[in-house]
Length: 497
Image (cartoon, rainbow, N blue to C red; front, side, top):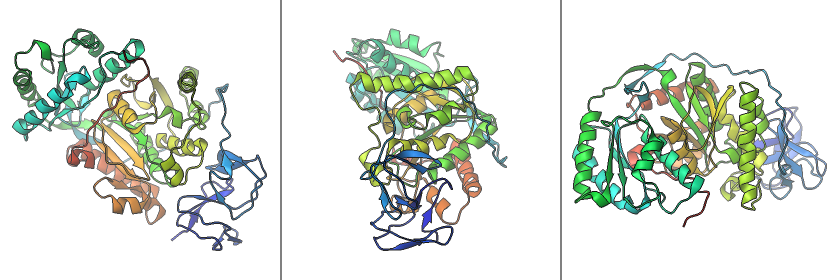
């Protein structure tokens, strides 16, 4: 088994594939023996070439930061001797690069989905209960739980997604909440939706109907709790009507081009950019090659790698949208007097990620090598196929919610640290290392760490492709579905009265 890995021949660092102690020796590509001067945890970086103070240290063939002092081969590279090279707002130029995305043509190119009257396709036949305001979370939860027990086996489930907003919000902050919830209401995995309001909130049902747009009265029902004599009884009666409507749908064969996947990473480690993220990128390229859609988000985790995405823009107009996406998010940090490049998190650092550049260069690999076709504002739905960039922060719950609202049928979530949560859509957890997959079997759906052992990228892409189509066809369920972990979180940026 390999003990270390150099990602690009330009890199001065290699990645430790196991933990090393000071004094151990590694043998480099040219046969040179290098003695380590410090302990190096698995997933962390070992310097193999001298670097002068202030010079760039390269990983993935790009700079991941500046040396804080002159560094000699054999040292452990981390926060004690490497700093970010990022600062301030930047000017960007469109310098398109020749796209090299190529994907193997898979054997399976269809799945069994539910075709909705709109022409969209769902992969689940569920009823969703959406509250306009946080005051009635418990009411909605009781209705969903009772209905789930009543109609088990007739549909794929009745689910409520708790949130604290919808009242005392002003301006854009309220509009963010309305857009996000409206996009969830329009998701095709929900055969039917019950919208429950209180009656006195800012997010009035009449306003919320405008955010939803034209809606089929058979699919979306509305109820104001303050006007109902018994809101539980009336709510359950409305769910019954929605279940009867949902039962009119049956799975049928549809092309994989109808599928939309969300791309997300969280609790990353030093292996994220070597295994799970490029694997998801390979899957994304394959789906896009067949006319499907992939959605990449976590804007602050594009900082430092944004030019790679900008230069893959479909045209100069899309390039301009990406520039605005990046700079607007930087202004959000500045507006709140926060350091733009205050990342990665403590868990990321413990896992071997030192700077935001390093995290971003690994993070963006989930987007593969495809052309960026569009940029989608927060809370809105994806409009076209191909690789779409979605405005949302890096926070796991907020971004997975935004990906689902954007239209993702399945979210692929890569992690080196592990997490149990899931969004409203099936959330596939891919471990970046095999130890995590063995230890947290009830969290992890797919072991991408095998790329460092006995599996090739093509082999694991084939395996993940089949898993994706099995999930889409209802033949497999993710751990978050089996465990009942379905949550949402809404981006907050404004005043609460």
